[in-house]
Image (cartoon, rainbow over all chains, first blue to last red; front, side):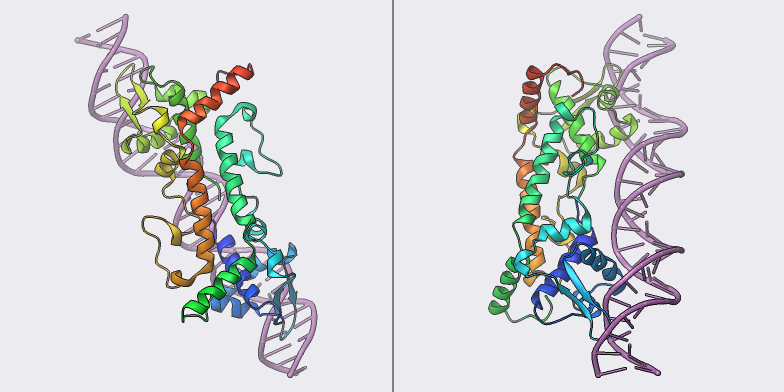
Length: 149
Length: 149
DNA sequence: TGAATCCCAATCAATTTACTTGGGATTAAA
DNA sequence: TTTAATCCCAAGTAAATTGATTGGGATTCA
């Protein structure tokens, strides 16, 4: 039940972009450096986020990436599901097209998987990047680390 | 964020034992057959459940496995955590001993992982085998499939 | 024109998953 | 007392996944 680095790195990168939302394009390399990630690997992740419309890119020198919309319109769920695919503890409870199982109609374990799935989705859909940003600002005002996320 | 077959098969096997709780030892082979699992693989899983004290075994002919305690005292969380280890979406939020991360004190993504972890644990800790058994009986009385779980 | 950037595709080592194989130990029943 | 049914244990393994790396091409600003 661990998330892969796709979801984890991806959310960090998106928060990095959220912190700098409105400041023009941010080069991938600086995001990768700030977050301590391989830039070529992050490139693969952000390509997925771009294709799904969550970020847009500006090519060429002085280019980079930026959120396509305000942090308050992007949820953690949008990001994680884009990168990890549908979040389900078992194939039979994938929301769009669950794997066929002949016992599905009367399977009691399936009910458990559904509850897990729904509870995870509720959590991640209820948190926006803006919420994370607010937490971040709050921490920043209380402490004196800061420069990283 | 999928569970492995350990947790999924393990829960099915435990429900199978719960259905037959009080009927003496159930051979692994019949559980595996009913649930459509490889018996040698299930053996490995049930060995873990036995070592953790959730089931006990009777050796020799007419032997098998049984729950050590009533289905109402065993939660889905007990079973899944036994088989899968601590359920956390990231290493840094494993409850017993989280992986060290120097940013842990002010990491906002960590807060998200904690919320996911807690919500999953709440769900699985709130469902007992008895609850599943009740669902099962209810389904059984409403339909006329039945023989499998 | 060149440096900074995004874009794309292929390859790869390590790990994990989901088993299989092969056998030994124990016990109830014939 | 033998035999069949069972649990117990350890090792091997093929396939998939993960988390990258490698190598290059296309675009754009200065």
